[in-house]
Length: 280
Image (tube, rainbow, N blue to C red; front, side, top):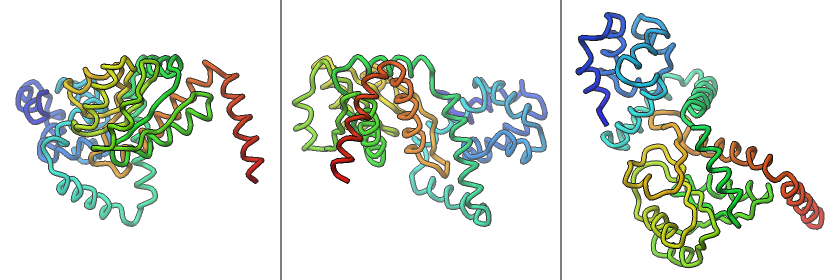
C-alpha cells in the first residue's frame, strides 16, 4: 500500500494550487487526515469542502473516507501507541470547553464513516451465514470482547442460538476442541495480527466452520484465512473507539436477521419475557 506522503509526492505536479494547499497540510500533519472533516480541512487550508474531496480523489483515493481509512492503517503500523495517545490528549485539550459537542460530533462522523466503509454485500453474506449456521460462537480480542459478548446476547434474543467464547491464550484450546462444521464464528479483532486469532481461523477452516472476521486493519495474510470479512472504519485518532462501530454493526446484523426468521425472534422474546417474569 502506497503511503499518503508518497502519493502526495508522486502526484504533486498534477494537483491544482488549491489541491496542493490541502495536500501540503496533510503531509505536514498526517493525523489531520483522521480527525478532520472535509469542512475542518477546508477551513484550515483556506479552500472548500469540494476541494478537499477533489484532492483525495486526485491522490488516488475514492474519496475522503477512503483516504482516512488507508491513512489510519498506515499510522497504526508506523506510529506507536504513546504518540497516538498524545494526539488524543491534544484533541481533548482543544475541545475542553465543548467536550460533549466534540464527542457527539465525532460519533456522527464515525457513523458516516461506517456507512461509507461497510459493504452492503458483506452484510448480506454475513447475515446469510449467521442464519444458516446451527449456532453462532462469538469471540473478541481486548475491548472488542465486549462487542462479541453483546453480539451473542443480541443474537440469542433474535432466535439465533449464540454463545460467547471468552477465553484467550493457552486456555483458548479448551473452547476450540468443540468447534463444529455447522457453526459460524463471529470474530471482532481490530488491529494487528494475533496468535489467538490465527489459531481460531485455522481451526475453523480445519473443521469446516464458517469464520466471519470483523476488522479494520488486518492485512491479506489474515483476511484470506477468514471465509467472510466485514470492514469497519478506523478510529486511531478518534474520540470514539472501535467498540462503538462494532456495536453498531451488531445492531445492523440483528436487524437484518429479524427479516429472515421473525417467528424465531418472536418465540425467543416470548421465552425471555416468561423467564424474566418468573425471576421478578
